[in-house]
Length: 417
Image 1 (spheres, rainbow, N blue to C red):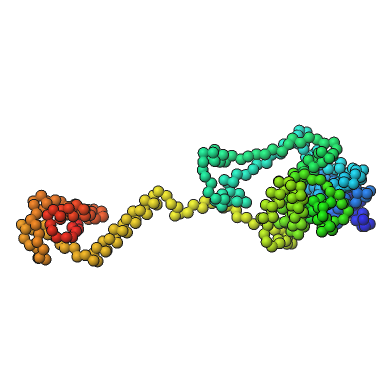
Image 2 (image 1 turned 180 degrees about the horizontal axis):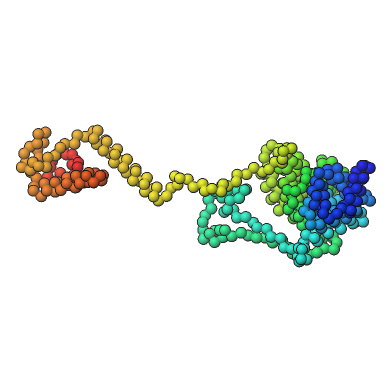
């Protein structure tokens, strides 16, 4: 460790002790800009034999149990590196050099599982329903969803999964080690949007080293130091994948890509179904080209957000529109029939006043109409006249007139009002 970095860490340890209570908020905000301090603290954590490691861990714990959110976030950014240092030291069975790191991890765990009143905290997670749109999917894109009685009874109901209460731990053992570390990574993932780029890079590097140590891939990755296999749990690997997936779209594409391949490699060797499912889903959803962050801001996942306004088309098919379409089609067919008949046929004019049986001028013979037939045709003409006067459509009685012509008139044609 360089002398300048050591001086930065010592100054950081001393200035917080003499800091007044009123200046803690402004001090917590200013920590984000101290990149030299962050890199120096990483150097201290990576050296288990450093004499500054114990006071640094104590200072980070003081930050985390304070009520300032920025101070708690400052401590959380070092959590991946702290976990890797603890696991790497625990494989060598040199537990004395990792005692302060273990105490810090246990202290953060015991603080998170208890609320302000000292009761065990129960975390709840709501599983979204696929029948409702979200920023990740549209119900219409999934396919046809049959509205059965069972589906309707479950519509609108949200499934809630609970985590906890978690027991307090006084020390880390082989039985509870990954239960505690998985919960700590859960707390880290809940604040991923506040994590700086060095913290995300540290998470990806820790995931790669942890998954390939002691396996043939370690030679390909050129990792030195730890050569023993470090056991992991399926739940712990799922929490790792959550942070890796976030790192893809926030400036750490290359490191996240290597970490995803290494986690998938370890999950295949261990035959863990949950990490295999999550890792393959992440790998299938990645774009072909690399997404890199810019100075203006980090890249995000592009999704289609459902609009808040209704998207019902004005041309929606309803019972009224179907009925209107049928009427319109019938009127068009009638108009086509009329134009065809008038263009090809010559409708003869039938005189209903000549009932004596005389021949009409066109030379066709007409049978004598009875008095009742003449009155019937005259009544039909009166009805058509009244319909025209009232503005109603024409009344066509083609079938009845055809029967009348078959009975009384031999001339073909159609009576038209």
